[in-house]
Length: 123
Image (cartoon, rainbow, N blue to C red; front, side):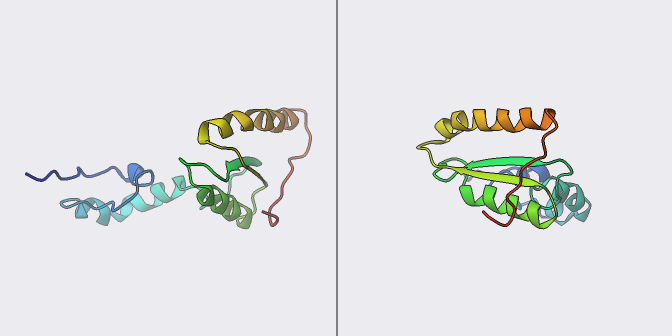
């Protein structure tokens, strides 16, 4: 007996690798009414209206670096104000801890009325 994958909701297809049309799910994939709301949720397709701070970890074993980098580049290309920083630390968990003071400083400076830094075109 072989197991078949259940049809995935469109939003889940963004989070899971592989084919979004397991056997029997072709009708769901062909439903073009789902495409606009799903695409609006895909990072990088629509520039955020507020300034964004993205910190990514070059050696991240859970969230690939290239995806974060490319998403930030797409936001820049759409006119967003993006500050992108790369950290080199040994693991996903350690990098998250290392990013906390950077993120808090970024937020504190926005509330203080300081202009948002950006480095589009240089990362």
